[in-house]
Length: 276
Image (tube, rainbow, N blue to C red):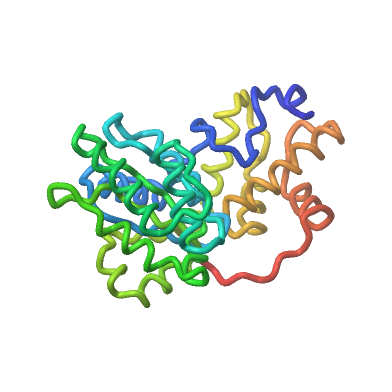
């Protein structure tokens, strides 16, 4: 709606996996490099954790795009809460592309997964399994199932690297399962953006969308950080609304007062958060 007004090629603050909009901030880049090491070294598992809205899923999607052809199949599961036998059957279908018969047992699914991944390992491939919303694994009693998958090996190497991606509670749950915790090659914790990183994040996404001139002035960028506490999802929501309102009011640049008014009227007051 507002793209042509601001002379943009795309909506810069959409929740999108488009590689153009990945902001290589220090905390995200550090996590990306650690996860890439784990996968390329063919280690068993890693954990990426952080509070909601920090961009964990985008980091994983960026990682999967960067991997070489030998690192496949690649499966990214947005964790569905289901019993272990159903979850393993679902994973087997995602890995193999072949639908299993109804009523499949845990043992049968594990055999399907092991056979398929072993064939890949013999051909020089290594699977990557990313599991989003990992904080739900404990409540679904699936941490032990994950550990069973890590026992699958070929020539003393894991058949797959499992990336557990979830909110901060996922790290606590995994730590309560020592047999799984000790299998994690690395643990990455995402942090909120600093004030400087928030400004760079907004500018980066605007540039990636084709912006030819500044849209948010320095006072607006300061206010964005103050109102969102450096959480990318909140930044995206506020900035997207600001572009819409600016278009409606035929503004040429957005400042502090506009950001404050838009937040108060359209976003709503957020609970006071502790500093990052």
